Image 1 (cartoon, rainbow, N blue to C red):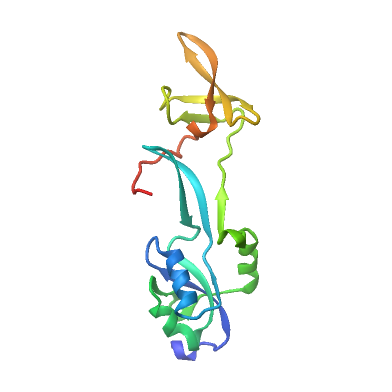
Image 2: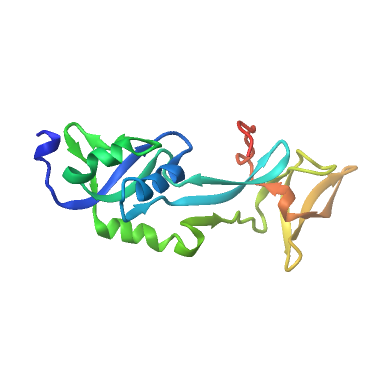
Length: 186
């Protein structure tokens, strides 16, 4: 089946974008391809780097955005939009996503914040953590108590052969496996 013989019905399609350009491609699809509905869900999260903890904003689906358009009438404009590399298809069939699936995803992303959802790290009592800054940087330890309202926790330290508790900032902790070498700047 060729592209021209696809249904002329409007639907949601998965649009491939250039790396790290999802939000730009979404903007170009709205402004220059004249698409009314483009959905680019993004997340904001904090991760440890060599410089300490840094907030990052990335696409929930790296390299993809969702756009509602008529495949026959708008495909050429979509493919020509800056930042777009094509529309996802399998063999000769374009992948169409149901309105219900898009609506379900949209529930999780606040529109007033430009479709960015903040992911807050959750650390609880008994969790194994790594201290990422200060004089104890690199130390593996266990959280013994969350100190409410102060953004601080107590951790268990081994000091001179004895176990002691010390208070540290919640921001200076991460879970094992979350520390990654910094690959790029912010």
